[in-house]
Length: 110
Image (tube, rainbow, N blue to C red; front, side, top):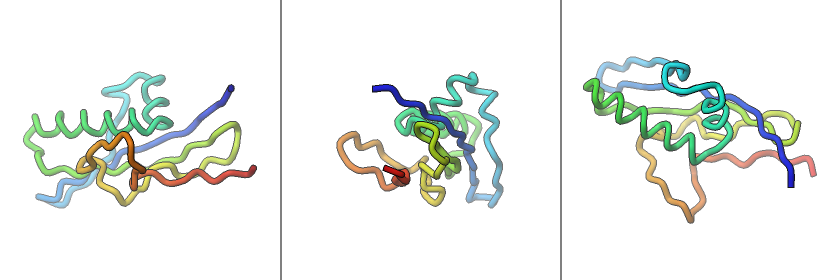
């Protein structure tokens, strides 16, 4: 079966210690192909967030919150949100055999 996914995602980092917020420049860590995979594949998105969490901890930011905001389109359909922008992905544990509350259902036109 062939399929096509396209989309984008931005990562908002919140430091609750001083209430500062910034958007991650993904090009500092990822190639274009990797950025596309992070945007459209939830498992890779989660792994990238865990990587960011570790990198910021090395810089002394141990209590960061990381939120994903973006949209994904499947097979040329209109792009819709895939990641719940209200869930701190830095605090989410990976559960491979359970439904993830941080993922939203893609709308289908079937």
